[in-house]
Length: 138
Image 1 (cartoon, rainbow, N blue to C red):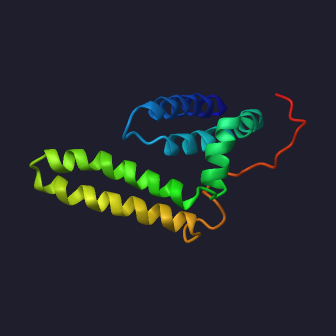
Image 2 (cartoon, rainbow, N blue to C red):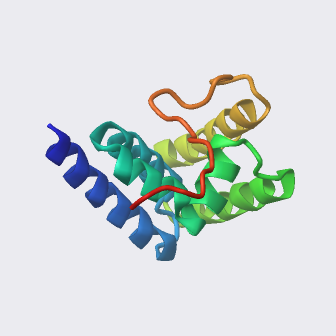
């Protein structure tokens, strides 16, 4: 079972990394899934992931530590709204014009609820942020 977690984690890590350069494709959720899968597979992979400087900066601090500043969240909301505005203004589908603003509002309310501590006060289920240690043998 551990090998399945490792393989699925590698796939979600690759998708999340590729998603950095593809506008509109979410990155964070793939890295959260990677953290969950790798933490279930082995302590070594979990330690490597949490000690990776990019992961530590963008995931441990911003997501798990809830330290993404309000200005950063506003930037995320604006980029997402800009991506959703393209199909909103170019499509004639009425249902799409209804769903896109609701999706944007759902994202804003979910993120703000999380960062303000209304959701998952003890952290995201299935994940944990390990203590920083200098003597981890990888």
